[in-house]
Length: 337
Length: 288
Image 1: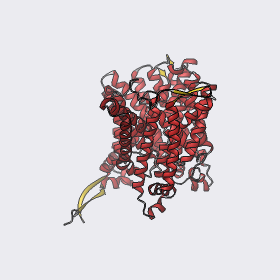
Image 2: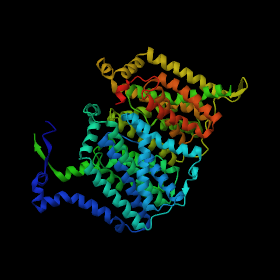
Image 3: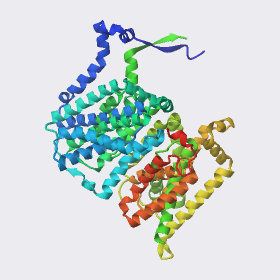
Image 4: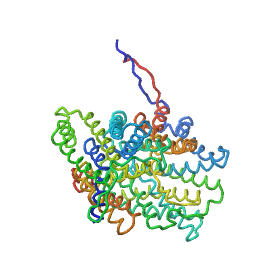
């Protein structure tokens, strides 16, 4: 009397195997099979501003995209370079403050401040994180967790850039459609750009650094340079998101260094599927609206997504993306042992 | 003189906050980011038992310490045990638990200035020209006693020695028949109790607020990192360094900079000497 007389086996679908090879270029079916998920994602994201009725939820779309950019940068850093940064708020805050300063003190229009904030902010963050690059694991995580707190305290203590009130009177984007399409397009460009980037030679070196940094060093590659490059890419993405956030709220202040911006992208990455790059975006699409719906419950929403996070880490550490991919590419059946 | 007295008091309270964190990390290698939450929850449990149910103060404290220890062990048994060894998952999971507890408490209405615990003993005494109240003195004495007791416990009892074995080499300890998960669970429980002791000693000096959970977490991380992760004695000495540094900045620069000092200490230590002052890990393991 054994309870296990059959087991579940997973086999790749025929169409998946065919579309891995040259067949993908020869048949419409295989071509569609390959492009369908990407097509759904792109059209879905682009049509979101039309699907959503009122102003309030349109604002939520922009916020979703901003968190998604941040989550994307976390996923890239953590799962393709091996640097786990808990300091998303550091990037957001830096980008936000730079955009705010450029806009109010030098009256530069938003479409210029955003890229400028990305470039300058990326440089600034990389410079500050440079001494921490040799650190690994917990140590890097803790140090990056401390940076946003440190920045917030410095601004508060020296009372610079408006002190605790923040910088007010920043220009907004010209219209809400411009705002949404701007962030959505940036998000999609970064997503597909990064997916392409991680398979290039540089991307391979990043992955190698994650797997075994000593071996990379032994092959005569300067790993600090590559790590700095990775941090620059990730932090300029974060700064860009922060700059957009500043222009959306027409305000930049200390709360942009708050822990929210560090923890929510991580939660989204874990839920969506770590190491997939698309996963974080799916995670944000679920988590951010959910936390908006729970806004009436005040701080309970933080408790809510913290518990979801724990649940996913414990029971579904692969995330939604892994699950979806398995269902899309494989079928399951019971077989006799 | 003022600097000396208040520096010492501040240092001891920092050491109290940091000991629990250092203990858990030293033994089970789990960075317990829910440490601050455990600290706050102990304060609120004591408050509820004392004011709502009306138990005597001493019994309320002992009960809430027990509750805290159980909470720590449950946390390890049901959550952290599954992610043990995966650094990042440990941090995220324990931090998420802490966040859930703290924000849950805030939602549950535990906010504002109404939550206070009575001090152990009223009155104050003059040490030279500086007035110090009895409670702070008691806190200091208990803090130093606690370190002594911990030292005796880890060096002269079976469980303490087993814990130390775990901390030194987990595989060798396993071979000698020490149940590593049980010991890690115990360590987590002890860590939670220590957080509770810190809470019952420090909280009567002010209000119980949820925000202090984050504060305590940062301070305990600061103490442990400067002292070297996993070294209790290091944590104790580091508490004195940071404690005096804080009081000096408050006196000479301004109270805004108190937190800056702690965070700066973390960042500088990690950059210059990641294993800390008394770290037991080899430098090569954590640096490239």
